[in-house]
Length: 428
Image (cartoon, one colour):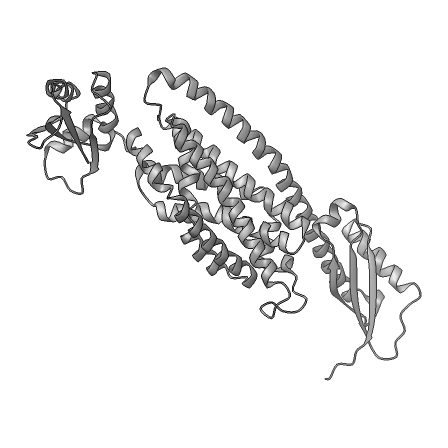
């Protein structure tokens, strides 16, 4: 339930009471005795779904917007009359005014926002370098990205340009700050005793997860956007949804920063595509879901104009998501190709070890050097094979070529094969 309190200016009491009666809600009038321009305070208990119609009726009746109308959440209402009100005003979403107020509250002051974002990015960067999923998730609890991600869409839908601009600016500047923070941390840590000698950031599993995304990653962002709007309009699970939105944005942004610090173009492109498609998807679903939920500008005359703006934004966001999804699709295909080659090599080597044609030779895969960039640069995979043989046994002529041909048939790819022969004696 909500308690709507209307501070009534001199001469407007009858207008407010008539509007309340016409809306079908109960009210109580308290005489205002303080010095000022108000003659009374009218208190009206209503369900959340009745707040917006009531305020719209007051506005249409000519009630001055410059007065005070306070909407507060009532923790408990003890009355059998509430059932009739809830039945009359069905629905679970909050009013447009509450939505706008919550969106403003979710976007903190700039100093608070950027401080928390830098701290969360620093923790997430440490989690990436340490390959610690728990640390990354912990950092997301601190990240304040939910507010700007949703307030931008709320501002567009309710025709609040200041709110929309602030939300968009905070998102853009926040992601740049996250990238810069991770890049600075990575640059400071490179070559120090805090990282092992020869450390390759691209091989860390948590980092690799962000630089080999696939198209399915889009569903995380789409789901986060929908969940964010639901949590906002129904006031449920906002903390967990904030974590989900931060997970979609901060770790890949931090990965971009690490790619800059290590001078790794592939990391920058792939993780950058992931963070951009995620932020566009969150904004897209938030815009659409808010409009479908029935939120509109205060003034009916502005509905058509706002609808046109929303259509334009949705079109731009869709085009951006499609283009970036092509990149993710390319990463998905390339990742599949590299994994398929390694799998086929391993399977064929096992078959060759069991093949009587090779006698007592045992084949082991040492490495398959075939990265995402090699798929599109048309570079041949380099396969290093360890062959164990009994002491004194000689390999057949053209043995390395035979191994290469078998592996090429199995993989369907031209290979460069390095064969290392080792005399092996095993104890009984």
